[in-house]
Length: 351
Image (cartoon, rainbow, N blue to C red; front, side, top):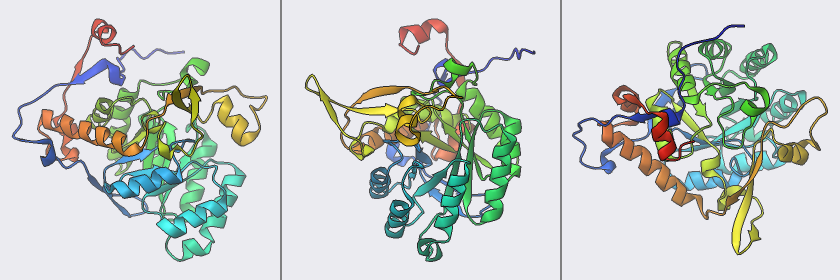
C-alpha cells in the first residue's frame, strides 16, 4: 500500500483566471481544431466535441442533428445498433461525422469484421473512426485488443479507453490508439467510484494524460464530469483535445427514447451503460459475477438539441474571450487555474 500526497483536482476545484484581451466579440473566436491522427494519418477539422456512445445520446438522430449543425461535431454511436441498421446509416451519411463503437468481446470483433467486409465499406462510405470502449482500460486483454484492431485496418482512426494515468495513455498510443479516452467515474450516471472506490479527479487526469499523449504525438478525449459549458472550457484549458458529453446532451428529441409524462411534466430516462437498466436492456440482466456501476435517472424533456449546442458552443467561445484566446488551440496556453476554497464550492452549490 502507498499514498500519493499530491493534490488532485476536479472541475469544481478551480476557476479560470481572466486576462487582458484584444478580442472585441465572441464571434471573433474560432473554436474548431485541426488534427492529424498519429496512426491513421487522417485529419480532423471541426469543433472537437463528441456525443457519448450511450443510449439516448449516441444515436443516429443525434448524428443527423450534428451534421445539420455544421460545426463538425461528431457522435460516438452506441454499440447496440444491429449491423443492418449501421450499414444503412453509413451508406446514407458516410463515416466522417461518427465514431463506430465496440467493446472487446468476440461478438464485437465479428460484427466489426462483417462491417469492414460490407459493400458500404468497400464503397468508401464506411467506418473512418472507431471507438473501443471499456470501463477499465488497464487490462492486458484490452491493450492486446487495440493492437489487434490496429493490425486489422491501419487506416481507421482509433479512440480507446478509459484510463486516467499517463503511463497507460502512453501504452495505448504505442499500441495503436490515435486518441485515448480519459475518465473513470466522473460521469453523472456513473457509480464506479462509489461501488469500487476507484477513480481519479477528472481535471488532474486530463492535465497528466494530455502531457503524456502529446509527447508521443497522440491525443486525448476527456470523457465525463462536464455538467455545464464552463467545465468543457476547463477541460480544454487543461489540455484535452476532444471532450465527450453524455448528460449534457441527454433528454432531447434526438434521444430515440419514449417521452413519459408525470404530473404534467415530460421526462426521458437516462442511465449509465454499466447500470442495471442498461444491462437488462442489452444483456438480459446483471451477470452474477458483477454489480451495477451506473444509475438511472429521469431527465426533464429538453426539446431539440440545437438549443443545447448553442449554449455549449457559446460558453466555450465566451471562455476564450475572457483569456484572449482567438482560437481554441490557444486556450490551454492562455489558461491559469485558480484553486477555489471548499467554502466557495458550498456557497455556489458545486457539491
